[in-house]
Image (cartoon, rainbow, N blue to C red; front, side, top):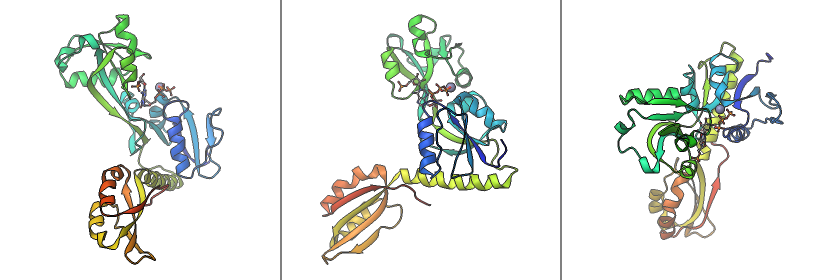
Length: 289
Ligand code: PRT
Ligand code: ZN
C-alpha cells in the first residue's frame, strides 16, 4: 500500500481512540468508517490511518511500518522504543503509581524494599526501583493488577491511575508516583526520505499545534465604560493586545481579547467591578500562532 500518504498509527479501540479522531477532525481531516477496518484513507488529506493495539504502536513506528503514531508515553517508555516525540497532545493524562492496601501503607519509599509488586509495567518499575536503590520482586500481570493484593499474590501494585476510583474500589491507596504520562505524537525520525511526506507532516503539525493552542484559549467579548479601559486592560491576561471598538453609546467601548481558558473565572469579578457588561466567552476552533 504505497500511495505516498503519511501513515498514522492510532489505537483501534480504547481510551485514546475517540480523542485522537476528534483531534484529526478538528484539524479538518476526515476519517470515515474506521471501526471495522485496519486501514482507512482520508478522503480530504494525504493520510492513511492504521488502527492497531496501543502496545504495538511504538514498535511499528520505530520500524517504519507507520510513519507516525499516537500513543501514551507509558507504552513508549515501557517498550523502550527508539522514537522521536513530535508533540505532546494533552489528553490521555494519567500517572503510573505505586499503591498499597489501606491498612498497610508504606510510610517512606524505603518501606517498599523487599516487597512483592504486581504490575503490567515491569520495565518502568525496574528503573524506578534502581533509581531509588530498592530491591523488590516484580510480579508481572497483564490485566486487573488492582486485585493482586487481595488475592495475596502481591503486597503492592504499580499501575496506571487516572481518577483513582479503581484504587478506592479495591481498598488501595496511592503511595508514590512513578511516571507521568499523556498521549504523544511520535515518529521514527524527524525527517522522511520521501519529501512529500515531510510536507504533509509539516502541515499536519501546524494544524495540530493550532488546534491545541485554540483549545487552551477562549475569545472574550464585552462592553466596558470608556474610563475603565486602562484598568480592564491590566486585568485581561490577553495573548495579544485586545481589540478595542467604539460603540453608538460614546461613553462605552467594546473589548475583544483571546485569553487562556483557565483564567476566565479568576478575572470575571474584577471585570464586573470595573463595569464590564454583556460579557461573552466563545470557543475558538483554530488559532494560527
Ligand atoms: O486494547 P489496547 O491494548 O489497544 O488498549 P489498552 O487496554 O492496553 O489501553 P487503554 O485503552 O486502557 O489505555 C490506553 C492509554 O490511555 C494508556 O496506555 C494510558 O496512556 C492512557 N490512560 C489514561 C489510561 C488511563 N487513563 C487509565 N485510567 N490507561 C489505563 N487506565 C486504567 C488503569 O490501568 C486502571 O485499570 O484505568 C484504571 C484506573 O482508572 P481510574 O480512573 O479508576 O484511576
Ligand atoms: Zn494495550
